[in-house]
Image (cartoon, rainbow, N blue to C red):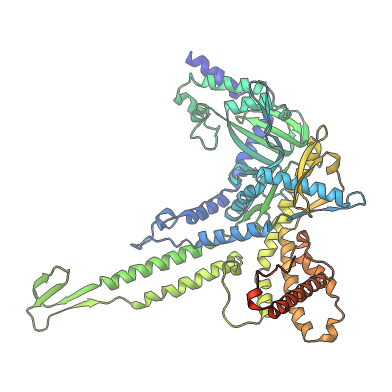
Length: 597
């Protein structure tokens, strides 16, 4: 019986699809190509979450103290907080820019923006953006996929419970994706995403998600493979060790785990067996053996809705470096200096002792103090003091930490750090803008290469799924502040234009312009001839736009004149009442009347 099971098991392994074998081979090759990158990222994570040096790659240091100064952790927290606030500084962090007369109307723009803002609020887009920033800073690479989700479900009694319906963005872990690292760009590179699902999840996908177009026979083949393997000894299965599955010790453990490994290939691939080129296809491989799906990518441009953002580009390599990777050596240095300084301080508290000549008795009292009785005239007891220059390590640590902040590109003014010395307002503004340029550049790069692709793919997917139905978006009435709801159809989302993520760039430009206006106001105040060329009404509207006060309708042409007139009237009435009260005898005084009546 065991021999029969072994034969059946071997026959199933030999029945693998050639295309599946090629994809599985590409996965292994491309995953091996990023081993150096994975090792660096693992070291960054060690220092990011370490509580002592024993949890880092420097666990075998020679110091008795094992303190880890969490400088990399502090830089990471600072970067994430500033990047998050910079990317989404307010609700209007993205805008739609039309390219023709029918697409630049206010109604069209408002509907597209309101629809996407509503979906972002319901799907908690901001929280998912935090996950992307985590990967971007720690790994140096973040990956996102965009899909259309419908979470409505039907109860046993037939009642439909509404759930979220709309475009959704999800995180792809950097460890679960591979691609050709030498390709010219990520978009055109073939890529493979690995997922591990339970048998139940795979069966549910086949039954409830026909849009995936999985072959139903795959579930039976995967089930038979595991059934045959149950009758085979571990020794017999070792010969099949060439089949490796990430996260599982051996093929035996994998087949008995109850999970299924799925590889989704996206891109162009040539099938040698059938002499066919599959261009812009998605091919799903189960158990590294069989093809469960081979379909054209169903998107408007033919590319998958999978997007990548890298922090620091490497030459001829699509795996980017994170901002923390090249700070690990400096983190090691400050840990070394801190622990060496602590060891030196311990030596000062408990120094080595030199005894010369004969010592007859050593008496220790209740406080621990020792008294030495020396019998020799030339004898003596003294401490051997250590070199006290070790205490200057504090200065070296401080200098190294400042350099780490500088090299990471962290906006130091964001945490209240200001360079020393007296400066004018203009000098402060200039220095802040100069120091923030690397930070602003990274923000703009993340917006244009990652967020904008996500936004436009969400609208494209929504147009496709709203062809046969409508959806609802929430808008705020600018006058009353009342929440209004409008119907959105596929036609409302059809426009010739692009969504632009402009949060960081817009608000940085606003801040710079506001600073320039403040300095100009000081100059104009000293030159009345210059003032007369700048109408106050236009300046008021400019400040309203910069400060985004248009919602509150604060700017009203000569709005203070009616207020002054009303104030003068009230003042005249009050003075008249006061005069009447002063002319009236004290005994006739009653409660004063309200001048507003």
